[in-house]
Image (cartoon, rainbow, N blue to C red; front, side, top):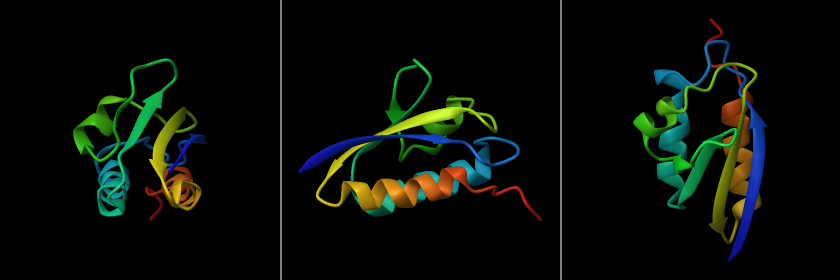
Length: 91
């Protein structure tokens, strides 16, 4: 297994609030891979936890760091990075 870390800029215009946090956490849960997410120098939280993700208080333009360990870790982080960098608040 390979461990990898990726830093991503939050794209949703209202940050990681309920809707984008739910989409992101569900994607992590569906992957079956333990992933952590941290903002700045804060403690990492379980990325599959909607409440954990919301508790980071990540706003648009903030950077978060994902860490995961899996066989297909780069592919997984690509998918999760796309979710975090997209603006889920567009109409």
